[in-house]
Picture 1: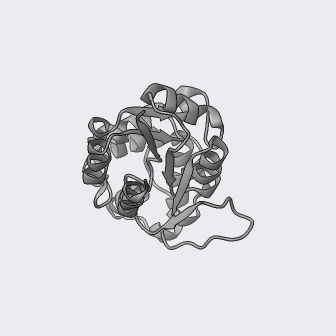
Picture 2: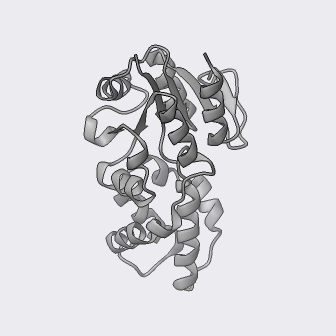
Length: 216
């Protein structure tokens, strides 16, 4: 029976936040605007939880840009092809899992068009067996349904499988609820007692592949 390894997309397989910050820095300089881009990205709740339309509207308002939010969104989708990168070791790690007989899935919250564009921009689709995007599937992590869909489409059971991600609320809570082993990519953050508890805490995505392959 094939085994299942599921991964979040943003800031798990690819550095989405890093690409967005780099693009906003270019944009602000190009418009002659001022402001702390990294502080904005760290505190802009809308960008990470709302719709793409909300994100770019908030960007224009925050920096006082004379630009149309919809046009900026289109510009970012073109530019992110160059700015988005898989984290170190991701592509080799995915292939190592495949060689070892694992079925691999991306399970991501977000809007279908935007998430698919990211996946294709970095060539991830060729390295996974299934992609489940919340907006498309009608189920958002941490709901168990989206994990079950990934399991069924990959042809591998949830039992004995893994969920790797950087979000405690979505990836760890959802993976725990679905009966998956969970590993949380901490990105320098700390874990409190009231947070959903992962079975493993790792610093980088590359560590996830070593962890999974080291297990019986």
